[in-house]
Length: 84
Image (cartoon, rainbow, N blue to C red; front, top):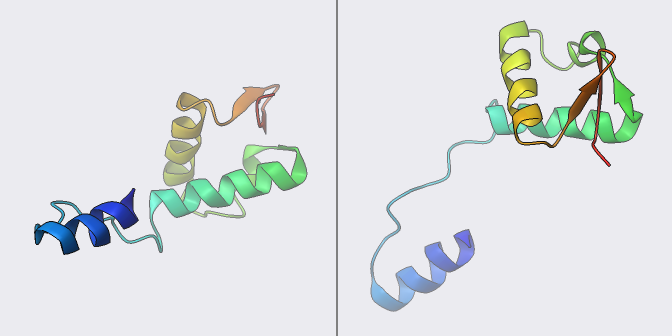
């Protein structure tokens, strides 16, 4: 969709998109991706294991909460997994 909005529509109409995607490096999106990669690779991980990815505990907790809210992760017995 970004490709279509940015290139195709803008070229056809001359109208520039109203929004731009934020930087990825250091973003919450990047941290969420790291967490998902780790959980997919290890199958189950603890908060302590994930804290090696991000030293800032509140930021890590916020990312985990958002992944749980979006149902991309589940938490059972203090272990994070990808829901079936």
